[in-house]
Length: 140
Image (cartoon, rainbow, N blue to C red; front, top):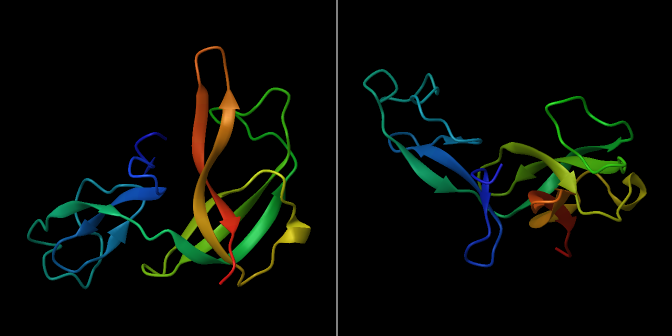
């Protein structure tokens, strides 16, 4: 997942690609060709360029994750329940799923609530702390 997001400049950003011809964004990265059937360059081999997604959106849906997902998902041991949110990004108007910042429950969230990207710990092992992007509520 290290190639799915960056926090190099101090701001968490999801990494994807965007079609140079029609502007269609892709997350995770699309490396083949534009899949937008209305793209004028889709059939001629349009160029896909690296793209950093916007950092804010609104909760589209959310749920409690009370059971440990099956492999290959890796989680803390023992498993700690968490909340996931599907967030519609402000700029791209596409929905991205991610965990919600630890310590929050479904009672703390609402559809339409503004959120922003942050980084949190997915799990730790003897070698490292493995991080992932997460959503956290913000004041609009």
